[in-house]
Every structure is written in C-alpha cells, then in structure tokens.
Length: 334
Image (cartoon, rainbow, N blue to C red; front, side, top):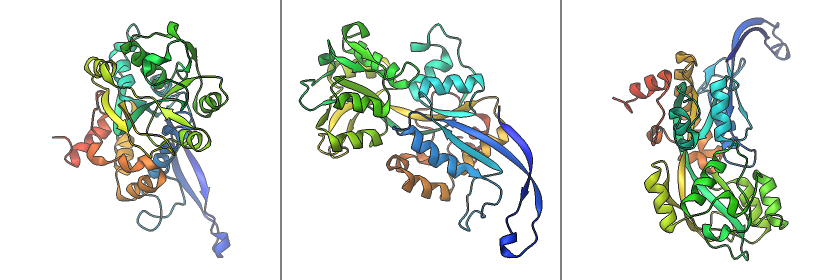
C-alpha cells in the first residue's frame, strides 16, 4: 500500500533571515523493487527514483530542481530480482518493481515456469526499460566454451527468487542439461564473482544490462571469458519462448573480454492494478520528461537505452490505466 501522510514541513529559511513557516504538505512514498546491488537493476532504480521524486522544498522544475511528482518520495529497494519483485507487488509489500519480461508474463498468466501458481492478474506494466543479456561467465582458462561444457561443473544459477535462476534453467534445458548434471550454487553479484576468482565455482549465470558493475570489476582483476549461448540450443530457446531474442555482447564491453553471441530478454517496470491511476499517470509522465532524460543519460551506461520510443517494446502484461493514459496522450497508443 502506498503510504501517504500529512506533515508540517518547516521551511529552512531562518538561515536567510526570514521567519520560519510551517507548510502542510502531503507526502507519498513509493518503492521500486530492483535487484542485487552489484547488478544493473539497482543503480537504474536509483536514477528513476530520483527522476520521479519531488520532496518538499525542492527547486522548481526547469530551475535546477526535480521534475518529479509533487510530494512524491520514491526509493529503490534491493531485492532478489524479478520473481521476488513480482511477488512483492502482488502481495502489497512493494509499490512497484523491475522484472524480466518473460518472468512477468508467466506470472501474469500462470503459465510457463509459473504453471500451477495462481495467475498474478493484478500485475500491470508502467514501461519497458532496456534489453538484458544473459551472461555466462567463466575463467578464461576453464575449458568451458559452451553451455554443454557445464556438465559436471560447479555453477551458480543465482537465487531461486531471481529471473536469472529461471532463465538459467531454461537455457540448460534447451541444451540438454538439468540441475542434476552439475553442482548448483545460489550466489548473487559480488559473491559469485569472488567465488569464481577463488576457484569455488567454475562458472555463473547472470541476466543484466551490460556493462554491469560487478563484471567490470571482475574483468579488471582476473582473466575471464563470456561463454557463448548460441547454436541449436539458443535457436530452440528463441523459437519456444517469444520473450527471448538472439543478441550479442560486444567486444570491449568488459576489459580484455571478447564479444560473444548470447540471448536477451527485456527489463520492464511493473506495478499493481490497484495503484492509484492519477499517481501512476504522473509517475509515467515524470519518467519521460526532458529533465529525466538528462538523469538517465548520465546516471548509468544503460540509461541511454531507456527511451520513450521503446517504452512499449515487448510488453506482454497489460498497461496500468495511468500509464496507458499517458501513452495515448503522446501518441504511442491509438
């Protein structure tokens, strides 16, 4: 539930020699579930939270201040990732969150990897954000050159509450492997990188927008490789699941690491159908204003890929009524 309260916001004008005043101000707190702090969701969530917030006392939009929603204080919350965020939205624990397009669709429909679970029919989309690539990381001298080479190895699949875990299982299945064919670990972010460097695991999966901080640090400290996810296995994956697409991570993305063919999914922002229509309309409008564009462009390397023109790309879960109203106003929906 969105928390709203009345406060007496005492202006800090005494320092200017003016008598202090008390101004009643309605505040709205809005959480954004992201992911592990070492990956792309978390910093992007922080940039977006700043863009849509406008706490009391902020300078006016266009005058060096925030162009966010009046009285809104948004915060990025670290989480276990896509599955965790979807569950938190539906349960009311968080107001919104990021998730992979495939995970969200399966949750909404109760199909795919969510078959047997009640459909999350209250899930709603605010915007498509950016493309996320599946990284399969190993040491350069590991001898792991394909997904099939993971057989018999110690591999981190990330935590079960993450989108990475879901996709790792699907990728292995498409290549004729299961969890029983390897020794699985459930490590996130920096922990997976450290375990690889220290020889405690042989490889790990992560689904994230490139470049991601933990892998930038790892590549600068150790000789690593990105293992390709391509060939017949990738083709079968893309054919069976429409949310996957063949893509690549270019050479130079990580220091000393060759480019690689892999698969990708979309990172999208979701909320509940129960969220206030006017609030979500204003949040969507704030996300796409010119000042937010500046914050996205400089806040993170992936921010430049977040554009209004691609805000509806690959959306498989219905738009929230407030977001839909905004996209109709700007002509993205007819």
